[in-house]
Image (cartoon, rainbow, N blue to C red):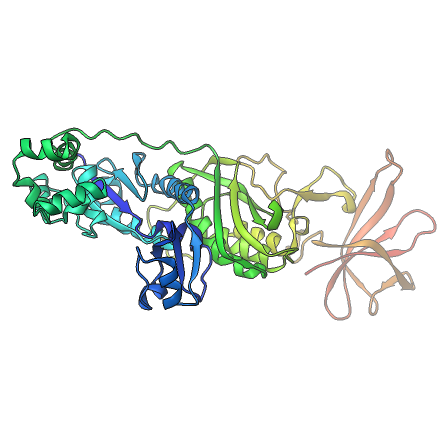
Length: 490
């Protein structure tokens, strides 16, 4: 038995244009000088869909009226379909303001119809959509329930006819002429239409109306063409007003990140790089790239990195729209979990920390450290990518680890090397650094580099300063000799 869920977006004409920014002014959308949708602030002041624009602005002078944009509505509906595909691959459009999902194969995965509906409702709210959601054994039946505002979850086909019979007849009429004809014969509900003679109804209103009714009740098949998600993600969000401060754009960016998260979940993928484009006047835009150490699809993390990047951004011009794009979509592997809880605390997520530092400080400010095949300390490590290797070879890695000397008290080499060795004063062949140093380990002789013109001949020691701190010093074996400070132990 099939199970369908319908998402009806009654305010899509308005939300397609205004969900990117919270504004204090009442908002409305007009077509042919008539209000077709308005927000709660406008409704509270008496504005209603169908009202003339002149009457609405006379009633609410602060009302911001936007022209209807069918292209933006279609783009938002397609974006919502790509997001909803995380619940089922069978998502179909029901223009102009609805989607239908066939979820019978997903109910066991999501543990029931109610959980799927709850996930859809929460995600729509996070993306800024007002959705009426209903479920029925037929797609048309679910759409009629949602369109009428009856958010019922009808799983039993035997209950479907009773649920549809209580709906107003306007859900059945395809146009105003059909609605007027049904009203003229006294049909106010679908139940009234079911009681009329079918032959006479077909002669007066056509067979199409009866076919729609039969499809809603499951008496005729109702095949649907399901959406195919694109290979790449690109979503645009219009702003109802120009934004002059970059931090105010986080609100809009969050909604695009939630949409991307669902898109990636539907493809079982993640991204290594995002691009946030801020569009100004005359089609000019500012590009804000966001990179990741490892593939990710966490909307909260996307938003946090976008906030870090936008916090330091100086806008050259006011922003009118945002576009979030992701081309590099790769398979996403989940985190392995233990079978039994051992009571230990999970380690911190160093990847997210690195990504936030890069977003705040710049991509070149944070990097890994790799071991080089070199004896000279100043050449023994080099900057590397922090992308983890799936199977590192012995001796390779992202962090240099110091070995312990025989005593096991301190590392034989420090993590902190000075950029240039610092000459030390000496007295009676004893080096000084804040006082005389006491050599506690060494010598370690290093003679290398004859092939590149930077050869060295040194004896390295671990020494203790008068303040009990440990330093790494060496004695130059070649003329003119002398002692040098090369590193500090933490």
